[in-house]
Image (tube, rainbow, N blue to C red):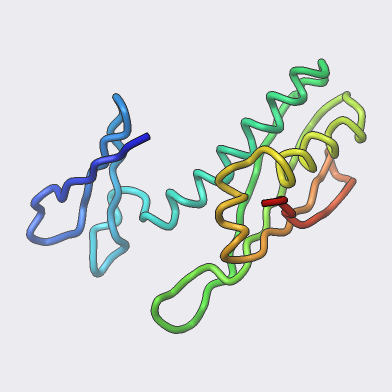
Amino acid sequence: MEASTRWQKDQQGLKFETQCGNHLVPMDAKSPIGRGEAPTPKQMLLAAITGCTGMDVIAHLKKVKQIPESFEITLSTEDSTTHPVVFQKLHLLYRLKSHGSKEAILDAVHRSMTQYCGVSAMISKACPITYDVWLEDEKIGQGTAAFSF
């Protein structure tokens, strides 16, 4: 796996573009340092976490024939107050609409947060990741990412 990042030679901003395989991914800094025309690197990291665990959960639910009607993951952070500003805590909120079983949903999330999500596994070494799982309007579970290394 490889990525190559280039500055877009914007004298007024900090826009970069990363080549990942055949894909181009833009990044920028927030104003006033950048122009905010693309996600920041930290926002891309959050997207990587939610994308990775989301793919795990849906793959597992498809495998057990429990495909949800809808599925959304929100990730919030608690950041340090001094430089370098880093994530101190991460909290995932899984929201599903499904006629499937609560047990299958909780199993899929648990497996992602203990076995399969490589991005979460790497980040959990630096800061704790907690999560809540909601089915419709009911909280059905919670936990902490706990990977064996």
